[in-house]
Length: 251
Image 1 (cartoon, rainbow, N blue to C red):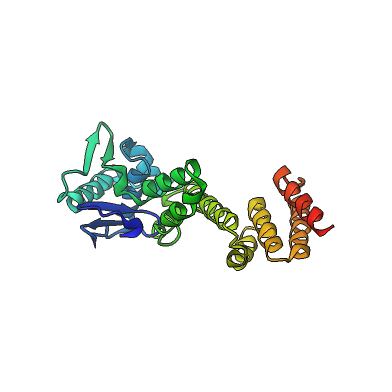
Image 2 (image 1 turned 60 degrees about the vertical axis):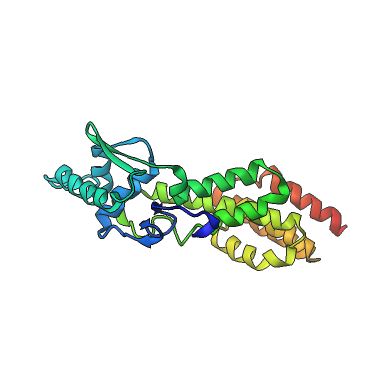
């Protein structure tokens, strides 16, 4: 499996489609409702998720009369999918449910662990750890859980974690003088996230490292115009500092 970690038994994926694997073989939840319930339980691993929160995730403000009974059915089916592994438990606690297992069995928590180690450890090791974490992503988070089933804020937050880790990985590449290797990637990312200042800063540094300082300065001017026109703010101190660094080099 990704990242070189070998898990025997049940593991879970939510960084992409929501999946259950048993010894590497998919045991997919078969309906969007089951996938939604599983995702909610995994996002609050080892904590009780109240029935009311699951009802809201599945049906928003218009649940059917039998909503809680339906959730019990989904939970029962999920229990059958994980029953082969005694190290994974899905238990009823009052009016809710708790899914418990080692965090290494869930791709989200492996990703967060690798990113945390990269940020707190030696700079020389950061790039490899970040690549290992980012390799766990199989597409947009919760890719097959759509509509009102999970709020946009949850999915946006997960995608922001991915993007921040990508920025960290690119910064690591720049420290290793791999400027030419990241310019094309950064051009795409800046186009996709035109108000994200760190991406602009990284693109400026990459272009400068390739001898394209004038283009890097132009990136700053375009970003500043967007920030002023769309948000009414000036660039951050970090972005202004990168601008001054390139100006000094150009002079």
